[in-house]
Amino acid sequence: MATVNQIMRHSLPLLNVDMSISEALDRMLESGLSGLPVVDAQRHIIGFLSEQDCIPTLINANYHCDSRAKVSDLMRTEPLTVAPDTDVFELARTMGGAKPKLYPVVEGKKVVGMVTRHQVMSFLNNQLKTCLATY
Image (spheres, rainbow, N blue to C red):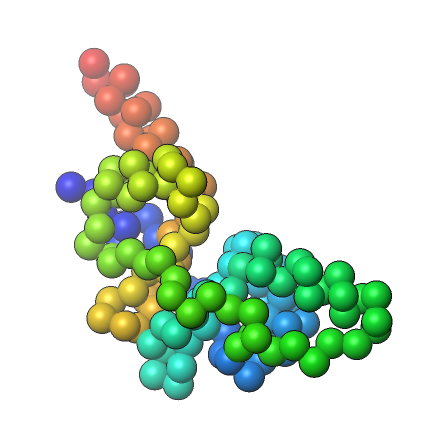
């Protein structure tokens, strides 16, 4: 069984609740991810912030040339997560619906990585190529 741990991104920037939206977006954009986990001092997940969560505030901040918004103001406090030992095919079925395009990977409550729909699709495509080559 292939697991999320085999395909996930192990290193990623994390956000904290006191961070400004601008700083959070800088980290998000530099990472190439459309969202990042929000963690406490022990790297325990306490929320998730996506680009989509930020758009209305960013528009308003640009209009007024002022933004005091913090990550804590916009983050979702009950993010969907997966465990490192989650079966990739199980996650693929979940992602096939109207679920998020990326999931924080959490062991206990600690963030250990991130898995994206792109990574899942790449894995499935490679599996198919291997299967077809041996069939």
